Image 1 (spheres, rainbow, N blue to C red):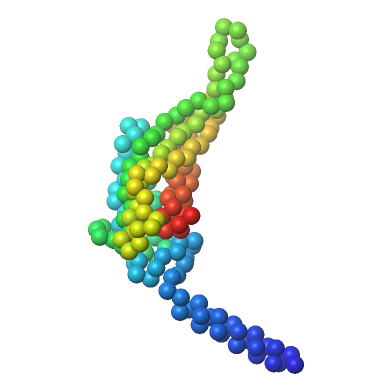
Image 2 (image 1 turned 180 degrees about the vertical axis):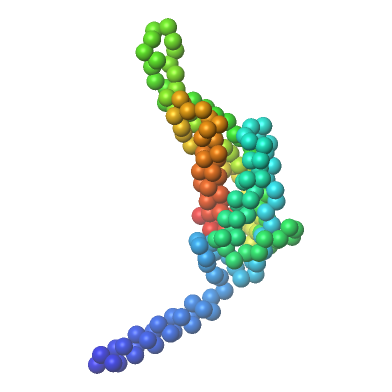
Length: 178
C-alpha cells in the first residue's frame, strides 16, 4: 500500500513538472514576462532637479541597470530593447521635519530631524504588451537624519537608501506588474 502511494506521488510530481514546464509565461524574482521579452534598454537618467552631487544621475542609472540585470534574465541593450525605461531625477531637496522647541522664548522652534527627498519621474514601454506601460510616473522616497548632523556627512548613505527603494518600486511597477 505504501509503495503504490509513493508511486502515485511521484507520477503527480512528474505530471506537474511537465505542466509547468510548458507554460508560456515565466517568472523570476517577482518579474513576470512573456518568453518573447528578451532585452531591455535603460536610457541615462538625467538630473533635472538642480540639486544633489554632480554624479547622482550616473549613480542612479548604473544602480537601476544592475538591479534589472540581477533580478531578470533580460539582456541590456543600447537601443530597441523589448522593454524601454527612461526618465530623470526631478526632485532633490532637504526639508526640516519634527520641530522641537528650542527652550527659549526668543528663539523659534527648530527641527530635530531633516529629510532628504528624491523623486524620479520615469516612463516605461513594453513593446510586446502595452497593458502596464506608464508615462511620466513619479517615484518618490525620503530618508530622515538628525538635524545636528552635517547633510554632506550622511548624504551618500541616504542616496543609496532612497535609490534602493525607488528602484524596487520602479521594478515592481514595470516588470513585476504590482
